[in-house]
Image (cartoon, rainbow, N blue to C red; front, side, top):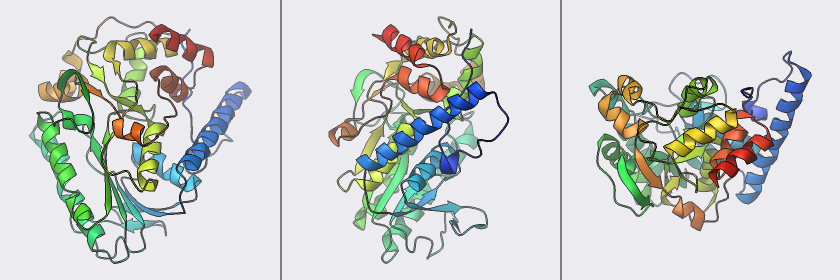
Length: 362
């Protein structure tokens, strides 16, 4: 029997109300999840302790932004959401991406820049233009403003992507010191990271978070795959031998918290699990966690229809064995370093299923 989909929900800012009618067993399960989540959040704040910060965040309503702003709020930090519409609350400021107001970052200790068009798309000319234009100029304008704001931010943390390394790296172990790869995403990420230079030149500590595939039932790859795998129709894309640089959403939020609070961490940082897996192993583990069979291989025609030939190559069947070397050197602790543990947590499955999946991997 397939496991019931019961994703963990963060308490406080991200949780909403718990009083909706539901079976008692389900409510007990959700309550236990929330308590574990809160305990893990508080443990993260103990590890990355810092005086309260005022943090301006772009992309705060997105997948990563929602998790991060909730985590920061739980830890006593003040979040200023930079929004592109008229501000509606005291915690919001209106942000014009290419021409930000001169006082936008007044009173702000740090900036986390997450905004940008989704990378997943048809990879046609229109999509490529949206990906570039939503990242390069806005990042440069925001970094320049941070550099010019008197008494303003001392830290500038910008989203980046593991696409920097290119889609076809095979078994090569990729660290932050590895050479950039080839392809559209590698070109975009190179220019995206270079756009933070005004902040670096002004003496701000700049961290560029090269994120892998983010796992969450609320968005991204896992949300798309869940219905297929729950129906027993999921499987690895391509040959199944491609390396997959993944990270759970909670761990990604922790990486940003670490980047904000560690006065030594700077430059590119690979935000990926220390235990990368091949796509065949990912498919097997997800099937085990959901207690469903998996197919030996899924034809690449589906991703090509959605992403085009180039998009499928650079996203769906990319082969990148990325390691979080700088995080490891900085003593970073991952909540869920193993894929089985991460998926079990995200999908709310029982510990015995998680242990079984971990045993299959060993």
